[in-house]
Image 1: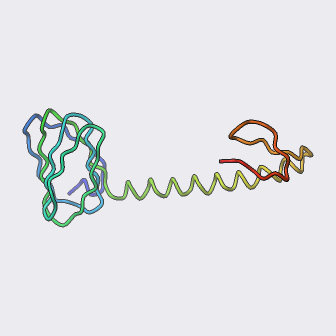
Image 2: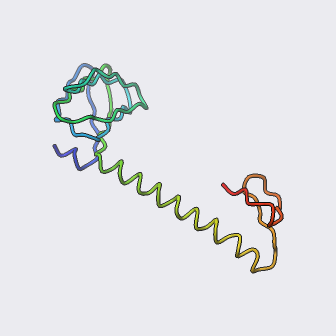
Image 3: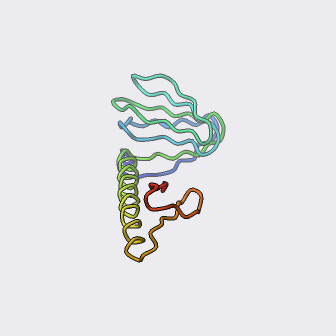
Length: 130
């Protein structure tokens, strides 16, 4: 079950079958071709290129290539790391927003440039930053 920890890619010929132990939270991504997934204690899923499926875990997973296919298996921790990065980005963005306005007032401009329309806005009118 190496894919539980490491992201990796598989290529399957048409009708080739791959059987793995299903790990909760891991994600199967169809990059090319078509995939038919059957997860134990779950239903059948068909994935087209660009689609993904998050595994429920707790049994076997059978993947069959409907056409010559390329797929990625993303470990569950990969998804958690992406969430942490998104949260950190939001915090940094909020801090920059808080810092920007007082800095403009200290410099003496007294106005705040809105990121949505590019026009100067009186400091008392409220900020439109996204």
